[in-house]
Amino acid sequence: MKVALVTGITGQDGAYLAELLLEKGYMVHGIKRRSSLFNTQRIDHIYEDPHVEHPHFKLHYGDLSDSTNLIRIIQETQPDEIYNLGAMSHVKVSFDVPEYTANADGIGTLRILDAVRLLGLTKKTKIYQASTSELYGLVQEVPQKETTPFYPRSPYAVAKMYAYWITVNYREAYDMFACNGILFNHESPRRGETFVTRKITRGVAQMALGMADTLYMGNIDSQRDWGHAKDYVEAMWRILQQDKPEDFVIATGVTTTVRDFIKMAFAEVGVVLEFKGEGVDEKATVVSSSNPEYKFKIGQVVVQIDPAYFRPTEVDLLIGDPTKAKTKLGWQPKYTLDMLVKEMMAADVEIFKKELHLKNFQ
Ligand code: NDP
Ligand code: GDR
Image 1 (cartoon, rainbow, N blue to C red):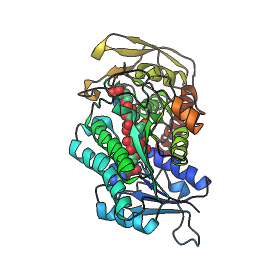
Image 2: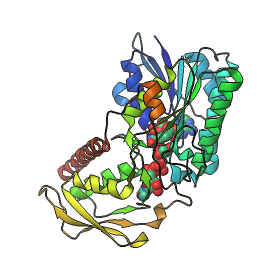
Image 3: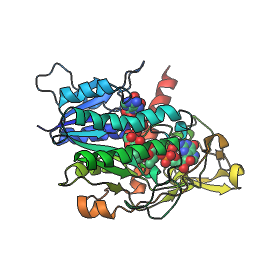
């Protein structure tokens, strides 16, 4: 049985990857952080009672800022594959906690690589590093591919740039099977609530049910290449199944503005919007609403701009070229953006219908 160790297992990608690896027959170890409330909602459905005879899934307390903890867990688990997905992953928040972000996202990656080296596992353990399209930052070339120069635009991206290069360096210096997946934005119903897509789908669902009036947004001109997390964890696994360690861009090759994502989400609940005004004065109002079940009024202002969500330095345009992944990994995304929006909207409407039902019941 192959053994995998996943950092960030409680996150969006960690949960989908754990499911995929279990389906493939792996023994999956995950590192979770101690928190004052339960933080395993995304993986509770695959959790196993630790008393079962032949376990397939085990969680360990740990943190990417703690080398001795990482060394101990890697020594105990002797993984064939490590997926380093743990990170302070919010770009805007990284401006508030830059030093912590550098520690967890940058040095955390070094700690994993060095633990494998110190334990003499360089020939056994393959390492996947969760690199990001944020490395491209200020646009140098479109679409962005493996050879496009980096120009990071946030403490998060700068920390991830260190992680990217230390992965390449350990591969070259110690002949390790260590690879970067340069993944463009990927979303799902499990996406963290403060990332833009989920913020929108939650907001629209709440408005549809009469639980909120307006969605306050930041830069809606921003363009992103959005895929589905389920497709992207498949790419992570494929990257580690190659004969040679290499870095890959994973993207759909299609870019969309935040404004258009908002329109698509409202369309799912039968609403057509009109955007008017410029900059911080831009607003979206309801032009028509075709589903009587939902509580929209014609002329209602449903989207406004709040500069509090602007970033000190922004990444304006991301569009990836996944040709290398398609050719060498045989990777092909199954989800379109339409399918993604539909799935996220349906899931959030369901969540808030339940919440409303509970409130009305009390
Ligand atoms: P999430 O924010 O959903 O998950 C991050 C995970 O990292 C959580 O399990 C979190 O734990 C854990 N974590 C945070 N800090 C630490 C720490 N100090 N030590 C150990 N674990 C920690 O991110 P995603 O699942 O979306 O992304 C996975 C990885 O891929 C991240 O590294 C992200 O930067 C990168 N990435 C993501 C992309 C995307 O579009 N989703 C695109 C490109 C790269 P907890 O649950 O306790 O907070
Ligand atoms: P990003 O994702 O920064 O690309 O990083 P996010 O969804 O946070 O932002 C995407 C774009 O939307 C704009 N935006 C807003 N963003 C948020 N969060 N909230 C808002 O209200 C809002 N309004 C507009 C942003 O300015 C930005 O341009 C994600 C993370 O998952 C990273 O970990 C990962 O590395 C990259 O994707 C690829």
